[in-house]
Image (cartoon, rainbow, N blue to C red; front, side, top):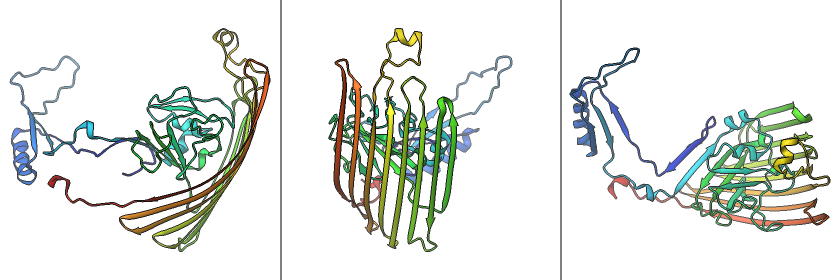
Length: 376
């Protein structure tokens, strides 16, 4: 499966190839059919040309294409046998979107419903294929560079905070719909979303932006690779600040990444990633319709907001033991703290959370070749 850097692709596997042949004369179509039958034994369906000659209306363009031959392999997969579908967004399309958050990029994927709370530390709300519309992305597993980020703490519904991702650092997004990726079973009833960030290359990228509601954004990323391709390093910084389009909806965040990868041999890669994230925000709250009609920018909350700090470190190992046997191994540690204050109807409240997460993951695959599928 190839990833496209310029368009969102919707892929269904295993794929069935169908060749449609448009011919201008019955003779050339028949010769093609007899030649292909000898090689593949494929089935065919013909659309016989009608004896009635169609006459174009005034101003119409009329082309008589003659006989149409549609060919397909002798054995077709049933649609019910297809395990799922995959959507991929590449770096070229991500660069064109100029998105503020990773959640904005998910709007490009069909089948995902967005519910953004505009809070820099509160997990983003989204649903895939309609699963659990009342949660923070419940039943959808999310990984960043292969490391799962679904939380068991806090709301305990597998929530994921996508604010910690720099959109300009994202190289691709892979959305696997359906519980078909056995590597990440937890929270993956509706599917899995893989965010892959940039890790290699010789480049310097910088971005400065200013927009409505005093929105300011600065981004800088630098990558350096040794000539022998054995070692590379990458550094990224981001600053984002906005007053928000409603009262009491200001939001500020800072992100910093450092990545180092070493390849002692072609089939082995070792990597270290460190990351720091900090945010402060206020939330305007849900607005009743009668107040929205009077002033769409109005806030019903006077003191609703919070802050969040996060530091993490990751160790990666990717080893192709053989061409058919890849091994990935990851170790990570996350230390974060955040506070949230709000009035939920019974008076002002404030909650504070401290999370320390330690994890390890290993995946060993084996690619078995059963020979020509047509012989099965």
